[in-house]
Length: 522
Image (tube, rainbow, N blue to C red; front, top):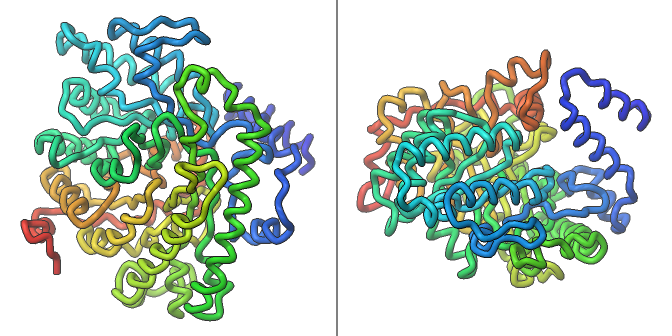
């Protein structure tokens, strides 16, 4: 298909809205530009599928993710947008809605809408609960209808407040794809009944993510951080200038032995990933003029607070290849016991790989980074990934029971500062016992989880890799398209990556006692 044929197919597609057609045409225009200059060796690694640039454009003119300081914006207003400082809840909501439409990302929509309860709490004094509920529900509906992209993300918690509880109530009622939602949990701050409310919401609509707030906060400075897009932790008033990822499965295929993997292959391909990071970040910071924008001039973002995300995926396949196990795609029978996620020797090799990656990322300077460094990220996969598992996850369809699942993956979480997540798929019986989800979450955090996410098998709204889709939307997508931009990605992921093969596991009370005072599970 020629370029003109491709453009013609976009403008004549009966299932795309006018806005969606404009977005796809823009992507084709970006892809027609010359690629940022990189070495032939790096080009070969990219063509071989070992290193991926994550489709941010050949000449990046906007960061991948942007996290404005919305609190500062509400306090000071904006000269560029001709907005005064907010003085009440209506003005605060109105100002935020306006700014959201000026915050770019790789999706052309804001991936971070702020720590919304903390942003709005200064403006709710004197407003009764019924009025607050109505205003916030209208806001929630507006976000879903005007920012129809599953990577749009709100944070709430860890402190207990009326806005936090009201948003949880609304989210469980509406069960919308947008916005994605992270609830911050801090055992020293968050009351148990609020965490239980968040866990009960998961039973209803598979939202929110629940983040280990102390663990995340310790990785960033006092200015803070936010969770964006799927589950990506990044500096507040900054973001991610680029995301580059390495396919560990393909790196393992280049290695003649485990020693060769650690001593030769991994360092070689990490160096090439850094070459790509430097090339892409240099163009963004030096050539695109993005950092001349009003977001910088008004102090809502700072160039020095943008970090490259150093992503990895395919850990499961890499471990099995290095140990001589057949990968899941190579076998038809039940999984052998020595596979990743199920056997200590396999899991220990995975931890060793994560530790080696952590050492490389922490010791390698970058020109445009957060305190001069990239941030390690367990990348959740994309819809084009075939026969390779996202991040450090256990392959779909082979997941053990939730406790064993958490135990197998918990040691990885300490290393992945800019985000790591698995998705526990829980049997629908948990709806009768939300306490089990609550205990499972607390147990995961006690064992070192950075982020807790779960799908309840009977829910229509599900997580794909971290973003949300509705199964009912997938069922009708081919016939009528979708008003939500990311439904197509979810449909493609369902076809190519096996997300619907996740095995629901019981999370009943008999699985939770091992998370008692000793925190030891056998």
